[in-house]
Length: 295
Image (tube, rainbow, N blue to C red; front, side, top):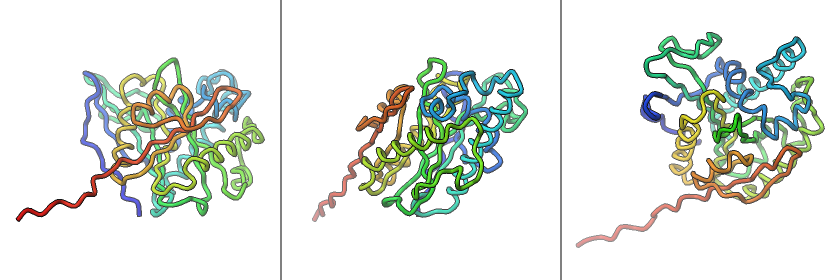
């Protein structure tokens, strides 16, 4: 069974004004995280734009009933993906998923005032989300496949991710659950998902002990605080502790951040809205030499 990553010291100071902690995600967090973090962070990225080609305006700023309905369906779908990952996280064994949220607290200020979920009464609020899976062997027996599309929001360099789910037996989520957002372009989604899955299999299909980063989202209005880097540091500590490879699918905006953590571009999948880079992080070589005896 995979060993859960350690919880970092709390609180951690970023710059002079922001404290944050990294915490596990629960089922009750799913809607709040989808609505305030994951959808706003994903909507300008290539994967989201392929999947929802009619959603040109920011979905969280819907100004009419149609936009509000579209946004509600997309948020619901994202929330289901987060819940699925939480459930997977409790199963243990190969393919176990981990989700962590990042909570900040501003010095001298209150929370974000949303009042609709995880804005803490102590002046804190949750503004980021990360997910990864730990695989000890080839995951041909694991049905859910989560891929990350890291994007750039508002000209900032923080990565954003969109979770999509496909099936190893060529079954789409719509076939499995019976419902998808009306705005979803299912053929385009299945096509790009297959291309991403094939690229992932090409790179890590024969490797053992692989950590796949599936999700990395920071609310657009809370970027440039080092929160994406903090989540990456947390993930990479877990990768190195277990001597694993790291893998992620990244848009051009995310390559810079991942490169800082020793991920290297090893391939690309082209989309009409820009390439998604396939990035691999090599295992850390451990010193396994036997100490010499002293007589």
